[in-house]
Image (cartoon, rainbow, N blue to C red; front, side, top):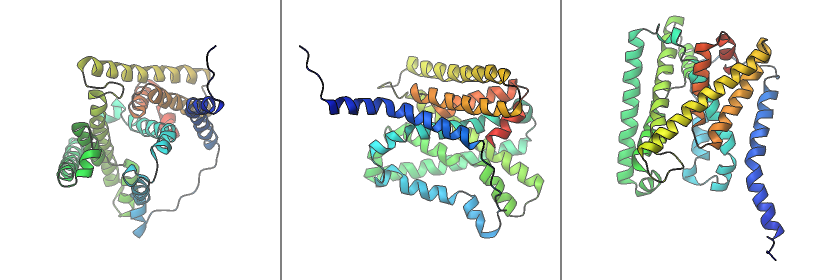
Amino acid sequence: MPRLAPASSVRERWRVNVSPVLALAGLVAIGLLATRLPRPAWPEVRGLEVVLAAGAPLVLAGLVLGPGIDFLSARALRALAPLMALALGWIGATIGAGLEWRRVRRIPRDDWLVAGLGAAGAFGAVALVVVLGRRFVPALGAVWTPRVPALLTLAAVGAVSGPGAVTLVARAAGLGPRVVRSVARTAGLETATGTLVAMIPLAVRPPRLPSPSLSGVLTWLVLALGSGVLVAMVWRSVSRVHPTPGEVAWALLVTLCFGAGVGYAADLSPLLVCALTTGLVVNLSPRRHVVRQVLA
């Protein structure tokens, strides 16, 4: 007769398999309930609060919770993976919603030039720091592997600017509305550029492949693009059934949770999948304004 596995082993295996599913379901429920809460009246950002508006608390939280100081164990980071997938999906959706062709083609040439120079300068500076860090701090060289994907990813993150935070800082500095809009557009272009560069390591070295290959790269790209198109089609179908603005908001939120879950389950990028989804939605759907309001 076959030997039965111990009860403790069965329970542990069940916990490992079910936990991500329950976590994603819980995140979807929290996201849906959050849309029904009243919006807080945030005070205007002035003076010394510019530092807070620029994201200083988030930077400090990242330093504290980052894996470099082992504050969170590998098991805890795996448990947080669904939350990270949903957060990346939401960020990607916000980036994609700003890539409407009607608005992109009206961006002045000066904004493109400033965004390109700013992104290139930040990318080069961070890349130099990473190269020097690997050479003079052996521990960093051991962590930042493979070398080229790590270098591209870190440098791309350095080139990203949060348009919302940049807008708040520009307003707090007393800049005029016209300048604020230009700064926000530039930050959005830098963010889109950094996001595209950050996708290169994932495409060159897909997570499930031990070594990069042309067929693996093409497969990953096709799956990512196909997933974005699929999720956009799901949103279009759901939004047709529920046409009112409030129902469209719920449909978009559920769709983004689905897109983040697809990216998480298939080892794709939830950021890229959701960015493609909202990019298609704002270019093909007449409800693009509702989409931007929901993401805001």
